[in-house]
Image (cartoon, rainbow, N blue to C red):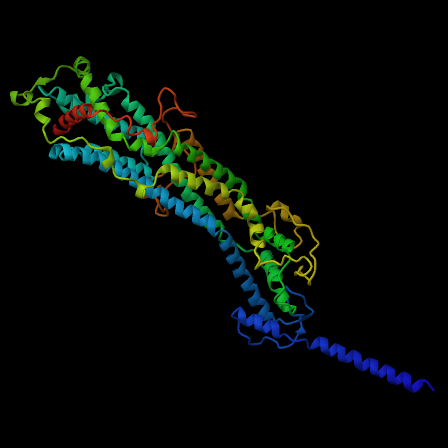
Length: 550
């Protein structure tokens, strides 16, 4: 008697089950289609309802809203999105090195131009053609200083020694104009430069100041350029197959599951990013050492190796040297005659000329207020303060890059219970691995071959290591060989040419602290030590004699 009701109940249960199963199979993909349109993809072959997913290679093979073609396109999109995220997160650091390199380079070049212009204007206003006809000696000096700064293979000590030797030859002829000197005799005179010290202590002090300041300036700008290039190169990520698969799963498998608005959990994102950026994180230790070396040289630039304080009064320093030569002229001439022999007397017309013949009423002292400003009034101190702050902020950048990316609201969901955990909506339980290649052995999200480091990243590590060594040498006042930038077609910017192995060039002994017996100039004190107008007038008069000899 109960048979018929039982049969009916069983039949109804079966129909209900089939009906429910049909509802699961026919779940709509409308949200996915809309999201796909937002991404700019065509809706061609995009299903309206879920289909069996056995064709998928990355996402779940259960019921899905993705075809094979859609999964491939989403995989390509995940790579593009990842590259965009890395580019955006590294934009600030790359901009800092690019803009500060440009500022410092412009500042140093303008400083050199203004120093040359200051000296040139002072002599032209005072002596006119007497200077312009004999200015090549000073032009050569500044030309070589600029060539050194811009990366030329120039030995600063040789440049300065040559300048003082040429100046001695001109001075000696003027002070002994009653004699005729052959080229061999003049060459003999130059051999006595170090022994006689005709210019007093000015050449020694100026050489120490100029070499240390220029070494620091060139190395610092070179460092900014290297930092810029390394940051730009490393920000162009090389996406491995394992990383590509993990990115697709994290960013777009929710689409295939019918949940396009679901963002990944923060810890899940960090594991994926640590796996994809494992090699970049390994750059961090060498990067931090490089930044520390840059900060050390920056301190030197604002302190004892201040190129602005050295170049600003260089015209006065040269004048002081000429005055010292005049004061010691009798002793110098006597010793030269003893060592090189007595020269032949000149004609009467030549010997009749004296210092008073050159000094004339056209002399006008060069006022310090008339000096051109450097880099639109920007001082080196202000530039250094700014760049030091930026450099400190860039430390540990590469190891913290995964955290920076995953901290963006557009990337992850802060709600740990309402985020994508790589399978469904819910909490992500695996621990976050540490950064660096060797720590990715147990990364649960990204397959990383820890036995094959990225050779490109290793090249950047070596580039930083070489530059760090150069900066440390510059901090101690030591020069290093920079290949002439004119020989390096691939170089860019001032001082772009450099070798991979540093070669130390002899200079003054390293100065770890400011030499108390030879105080370095400061920008503020540059003009306080200018001679009085009467003294400067005498100096410039003597300078005219030097320049008028041909």
